[in-house]
Image 1: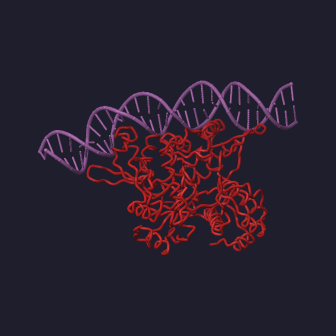
Image 2: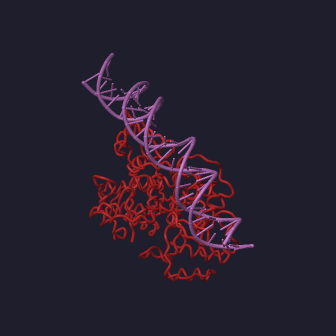
Image 3: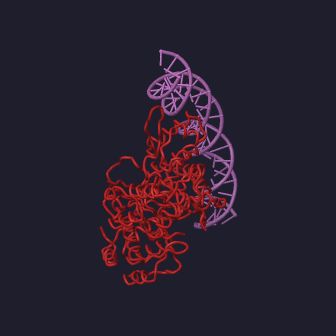
Length: 228
Length: 228
DNA sequence: CGAATGCTTCGCCGCCTGACGAAGCGTGCG
DNA sequence: CGCACGCTTCGTCAGGCGGCGAAGCATTCG
């Protein structure tokens, strides 16, 4: 099912040119959290008129980075694929040199826990994923990683309400703050959703950061997730 | 030691515009294997005149993607950083849709084993890394992953001549063919070099593919690396 | 020393593309 | 039904950037 030939120069250049415009970059970054937003809102986020935004969105759509659906007189855009989000995240790895300002508090929150296309990323995401692997609760299947029954049982006992465990697969997703893997894919999304529902995590009003609650941290600790 | 704030729209766009030109993309792709090449050779690889290539190389240099050093009347360019190679690899993850031709034989070799910035990537690299983790031969240290003494002993017993084990650290590197991690960083480079010296792998004359030898596969099997 | 070589800098041309306003089109509301 | 609204398409303009040849500079070799 997988096509994985190396990118040639033209494909790489085409991909680069899609990212090469601040307006398009802004719109993509506004969508990394996995939400779908109407064209007008994206135009505002990018600081351009609707006409210009429409052209940019069309290019991103044609380039396969976005998907769109119409609802009433609105047209909602979202990232085409979870892998697009992973790609955008991994680009942060490239800045080898660029000396920059000291990390802010928002950065620290973002590093701790955030959502990356609806699944958990950041230090907490990486630690959680590592624990699942260490306890051998994940198993490699045909389409990715699957949660073993004993793992599901342990998580359920901790208070998470899991759904569709046998059918959901997870994918490795590279974490740019930790430079290690965390769990993405439908399985990652489901687990993160369960944590949010159980109150382990609370979304912060602005941005992608997630705030772990005391109860959640306690349960995670019991599961064996190292917390700082 | 790490600065990991999210990319803003301008940084992302700047990075994208560096990749956005087929000529620059070709030069970068010619350097993913970690080699350093003189400007003229890169100009030839990109199919442009030295004058044009010089301008492109300068932009890539200023953008922090390349490093250069002069030797005689030649000027050698290489990727600035291992992370740049990892970033280029991970970009292959993005092409969600793009229907393409059936994988060729060269692709199959490339998927099997190749060098990514001087360390082992591909199915074999992923399997090897997974085995090191499963056997608990890697340990997380301050700067990355370190090889434990028992792991080093086992590898030495298999016929690898390891060097500087205590000081070399490894980094996770996302594999675009496998969508899983393999071992990069100085530790990954050292292990791969040792495998090449021991004849476990043989570099193929053109491109980045590596050909595993019978002896190497036998030793890897003994170590517990699942082969296919 | 002078010619050849490898690379960079300079100057110029042509194309691409991003920006906007105006107009067109479909949907929803009063 | 007609107007308001959200979005797209069209036409136009200006700026940016890639391309090359010629010239400049350093290094190597005879």
